[in-house]
Amino acid sequence: MGLDIRIPLGLVFLIIGGMMGVYGIHTYSDAAMYEKSLGININLVWGGIMFAFGAIMFIFGKLSKPQDAPAEAAPAAKPHH
Image (cartoon, rainbow, N blue to C red; front, side, top):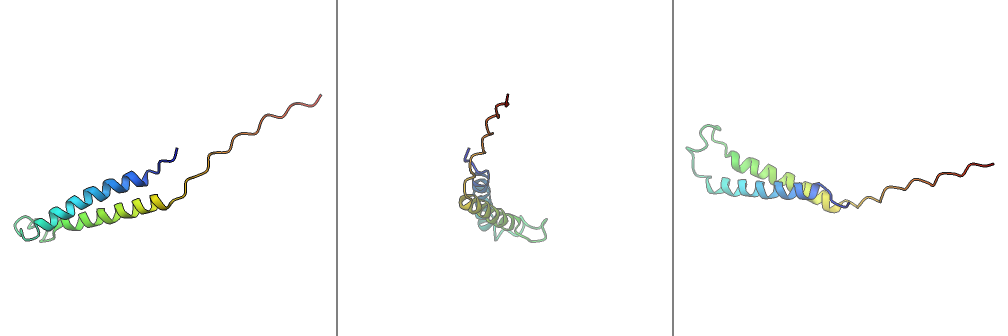
């Protein structure tokens, strides 16, 4: 099989991180929303972190070389009589 888990995992983090980042940008001026987080726009910060992680996973998944097929076992030696 040639499926590298980093590719779909990277895509998931790219999509979710992108959505959180866009939401954080749109709610940037809403100070009341971010009072509980000490004025830090958590959606924008974690959206960026998730997006960066997803990009790294996706790029490393694309750059990796496919592994060779596992070696087959050698045929059993015939006994000498």
